[in-house]
Image (cartoon, rainbow, N blue to C red; front, side, top):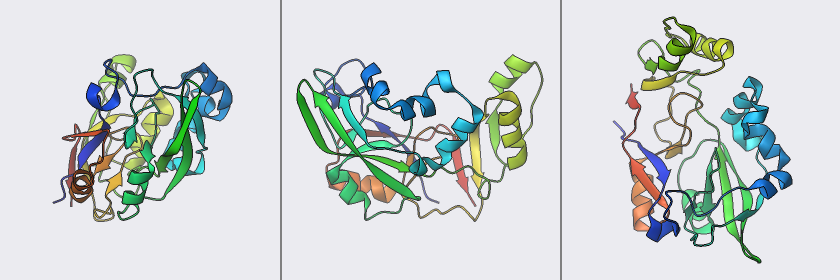
Length: 234
């Protein structure tokens, strides 16, 4: 059985340059003004269920991200955390490496950073389709955390089908987070990088063979951890 790990950004100061536990870069009001589409897609002030459904197919909605400011002490690595809610910002080196591995349907969008008056390119925003479980998850065998729903609506909840899972989101405005996901034979276990839409994780999982490639090619700016949601493949 394949043992995927969660792929995260590094928060090591010697790697990212800052000691706050944040990334090397950030989005500010000037960024939002230049990228109103990003504000409308992700900002809480525009929160709608239809907007959040788009996150499952982000390659269809991405745009170049230009002039993202770096922190004064920020360092660029192969994986750069700028506080974006979806996808990964990757270097040209990492993009070339990923071409040899299997990803869901995906696209790359141009990224540049600014530090003072200097603008730095050679980076890409990688966006890929997220797994919604419609055809690949056995909901009757999976487990979910309903603590928020119980607290807010003072009733118990059960999910045993994809339809029930999506209905909970439609009716209550918030999806239940999985603590155990059982994938059926339709899930592609040859994927090297993938993520879920709502179900378990906001960003991605990495395969052992891609992680080994990261290590062999000295990819910087990432960390991994054991999945917080148990993943089972049948």
